[in-house]
Length: 139
Image (cartoon, rainbow, N blue to C red; front, side, top):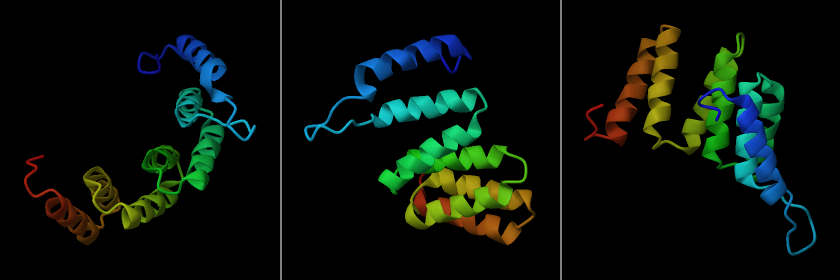
């Protein structure tokens, strides 16, 4: 629904998922929130340009699980698209790569970011990491 920009359908699906699984009760009696539901909710918020709310969800997901690469990448995407947040986006991507050095897509994204600010040495380093990480990939 989101890919087709059908926000009404996306909201209906999200409501149904919320009713089915989001507020399920754990064995200890506490209410839990489905990670999938949180992902879908944040994507819906992004599509409605409610970036601060989506960012809060991603931050909460990262607090709960610091190795959540999905939340880290979405957070980077949000920062990257906002004017004036480019440095924060690069810093976040750099932090992500320190932990996830085998993520070829992230290295390519960092190389593009370096090229955007004319940091050719940094871009070359990133592309070296791409080749070292995935030497047989022709892309």
